[in-house]
Amino acid sequence: MAILEVKDLEVCYGVIQAIKGISFEVNQGEIIALIGANGAGKTTTLQTITGLIPSKAGTITYEGKDITKIPGYKLVGMGIAHVPEGRRVFAELSVLQNLKLGAYTRNDKNEMEETLKEIYERFPRLEERKNQMAGTLSGGEQQMLAMGRALMSHPKLIVMDEPSMGLSPLYVNEIFDIIQKINADGVTVLLVEQNAKKALSIANRAYVLETGKIALSGDAKKLMNDDSVKKAYLSE
Image (cartoon, rainbow, N blue to C red; front, top):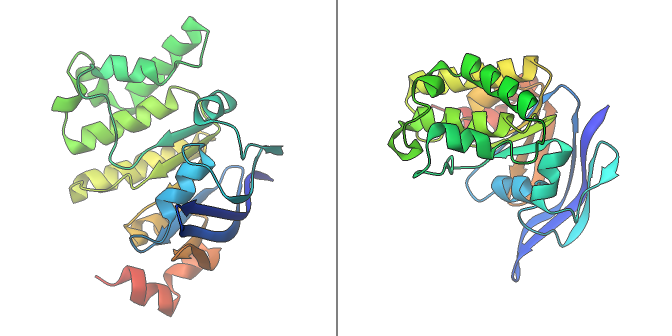
């Protein structure tokens, strides 16, 4: 069953059309990868889904409800979390304060504390550094914090934008392992990732975006063996 459906989506920046009528769906429990070159429209797609920028046309449906015009802060309460490109942690707040901000839509303090324990179990380094300013963490630790902050809202769907950007190979592997574990715990994942090989290796299905249009889609493992995908995105 589709948890998210995007139909005929168009997005413009002034006179420039960034997204040109794309349609795709994300089924419950899947990891879906959205890959493509820089400027293809991947981040714009995610930001439109999560209510950060408006669409010009088309519909976005989440759990059967049209969310096209719903602002981002309301979507968090409905179960959609966004891990933005570049982490965007609050540098001058502590790790713990950042995590608590992720739970601002939740009213039950006991439940929130339980989730915090789960986050610390998943990311032991965040507990070790809970009183440290977020801006002093390494890039990999900041990425873990951004993911932990998103998970504090107890999402059903988590949207991740370039989680491996700027990280060492060791951290890249760790982040992708964590994404798989989050998914195994029942959270659906929509992943935008420049590292196409890594993204396709953990995804169920994938969509290839080219200049605002979907050029290819299908089973992620099959796309890994597609000659055009190999040539454009998987060459070393």
